[in-house]
Length: 390
Image (cartoon, rainbow, N blue to C red):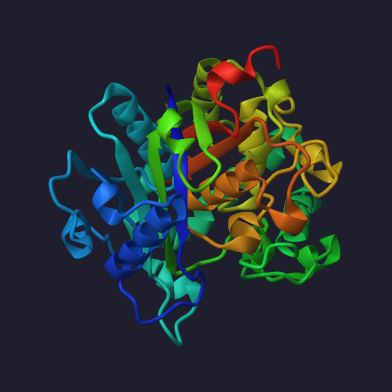
């Protein structure tokens, strides 16, 4: 039977003002239901992701006029939430606890005439004191913590700023072909190197966008999804990993992530290995996150993520198409819904100019906190039983 994503709803994304997270979330759920060819009344479950700009809350069900729901929850694991929601929904529909569940993320941190950095000040404040480091020691934003991770990876493995830049360049190459991407002008390694420092060794082009908007998906049984309006995107496997690193000497911070646990879990469930994966949609809040995640999934040896990016493998025409919609670096920043939404588009074969040649096995990752939480999904257009002998 299995589970599948049957609907995808995306509001305007980016500098979208005048709508609260709840209103944006309601719009996305309506769009996802309509995309699947369903009525709102067909939903009997709703999972809501918390956001930094204010959570839609479980009150969203009342806003949508949903009645007699069998499942209603607010979930929060930062950027790992989208993958966790889909996994939870898949288990629920396979068990019979619910039939059709909407999973939604909405956020609206951006304000008119306010910088993106200011919009995420609250996030920075939440992390002051993490691992004993505070603003008095220069840790004034989340950027500083990811810069520390990048610095450690560089010191251990010789990763270079230019290799981080290769991630930014390949991701932008994909974004130039995505009409929904916020940043579509091509960039070069030189552009990356000349972009201003945010926190050394991270340049501006190493850091993700900040976006307002909402994205929702509808999860139902695989057999039911086959009879709905869109090609079903089957949920083949899932997993989570929460390493609990401390920012202390001897810890794995900046060297490994929860992908090292969640990846093998999801792949084993799906009956695949890294060699079977056709494309990756990974959480890329920073270029270093992409490198760490791909290493931990086993697409290259530990410490060789920079060389992988530098080889051109991740961009158009490469052997491992990664973040084909522009990711969070150049596309749009909707936490774990950014990679998930692009995976759905690619699995359906609806990527247009950016459609990757192979889409049978798509790996989707979510990252939360400061490399603290991780979720992995394996998605594909073919039901599990029909993939035998691949």
